[in-house]
Image (cartoon, rainbow, N blue to C red; front, side):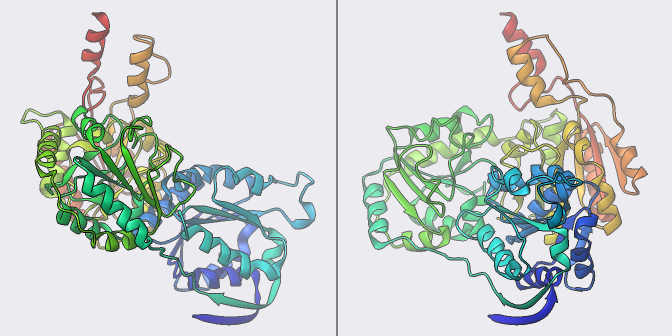
Amino acid sequence: MKRTIRNVTVAKVIVECLKQEQIRHVFGVPGESYLPLLDAIYEEPSIEFISARHEGGASFMAEGYAKAARTCGVVLATRAVGAANLAIGVHTARQDSTPMVVFLGQVDSRFLGREGFQEVDLEAFFRPLAKWTVEIRDAERVPELVQRAFRTAKTGRPGPVVVSLPEDVLWQTVPEAVMASTQVPKPAPRHEDVREVEAWLTRAKRPLVIAGGGVKWAGAEPLLRLWAETYSLPVMAAFRRHDVFPHDHPCYVGHLGLGAPKAVRETAEQADVVIALGTRLSEVTTQDYRVPSPDQTLIHIDLDSDGVGKVRAPDVAIWADCREALSRLLTIAVRPSWQEWVAKRREQYEQTATLPEKPRNVYEAAMASFARHLPNNAVFTNDAGNFAGWLHTFFPFGEGHTYIGPTSGAMGYGMPAAIGAKLALPDRTVVSLSGDGGFMMTMQELETAVRYGIPIISVVFNNRMYGTIRMHQELRFPGRVIGTELGSVPFARLAECLNGLGFQVQTEQQFTEALCAALAAKRPTVIEVLADPDCLSVSTTMQELRARQSL
């Protein structure tokens, strides 16, 4: 569908592009370099500008929103200073294959190249981080290039696009602009590709599917489940793609994440045919590029032709949309002979995913309480940190589209991403998990949630240190602690100072009571969990680590 508008400002054209893409929320920190664009948004009732406390928080909100809404996130900032602050969100979107368009105010065109106030070459600055960067200096090209920005962000492997807008250009008038909706191609595998997969599976003894974000972006989770059930195929989730397949399903055999249990790694290593579906096979998913090994057959199915072959040359390379690929792979004539192996690997996975009986540590207690009291369609976001290992290991993800986490490992992500996710999914409960180190990096965005009435629940595991780094520090430099100890911060009280709700808890009963109160309150809430610094990860305590080192 096309429409034409005439004699409107560049700022108005950009807003019309947002409307064409059905964007309902944009995020940012206001700046004088793009005031005309802010004013044009003010006049558009269908778009709400969410004013954040920091550009980094705004970019995380936009990225989390994009994942939750399965659409393009939009974030705005000013010149070099705001651009530098939001760069972390651009990197996260690139690593996570999240479509996002970043609009940056730039200095007046007359001052470019003179080291004007807050000037930097934004195209060069973001080129290594973004999928595409462009600075628009010709007003008449704004409709073309902004629409191209959205098309680039959404097609192929999705990713972030950065658009630099010199301040004077925003005031100029465009004589005519043609608005056209972005059509995202959905390439299907060739008939020959499907037959080749069929041939490899016919010979397979221990096949394994590793399912990644491409399945989620295609909305192909139901098809993946049907395919796995039809051919008794075991499925593993790629790093931080937990909700791609229900954990209670007999075909689910684990998550290839940081600190993956030995039994899960063994399943990946034992497979003779590995089908990588919608995953770029990152360092973490491949367990430091060890899986798949040269001895394993690799079938790689993904939208991104550039990503195929980065880890190792595939035996079969298929460039296709995951939904289209799965719909055609349901036609293959294969009689599975591997059910016994799948059942055994499922049994091994279940042993790793079973919560210990009471008494439990506070992380285990939180997972048990989540499983009992949260709605089935509740959405989790999480920050970087070892605390997430308990969520990844023990929480039984069931329904699809219930998890949002940064494969980039960005600290400060969890709570702002939850704000974005809640705006995208207002009828769903959204819970963020953070450590005290990461939460403090973007805690100011809790005020943003309060100001806009966005009722998220933020769980902060407070062990008064950068726990993940402390673990590695103890492993490599035992007893030589520097930089990883943090002060005592009363997060529950700080939440109340920001007009949110705050609870400080230390036991399973206290946590459950606080969680139930937060669910009932429907206000931005922080549950501060006083955590034991000795508890470094799911599999390691400080005491155990030092005992092993002393042997």
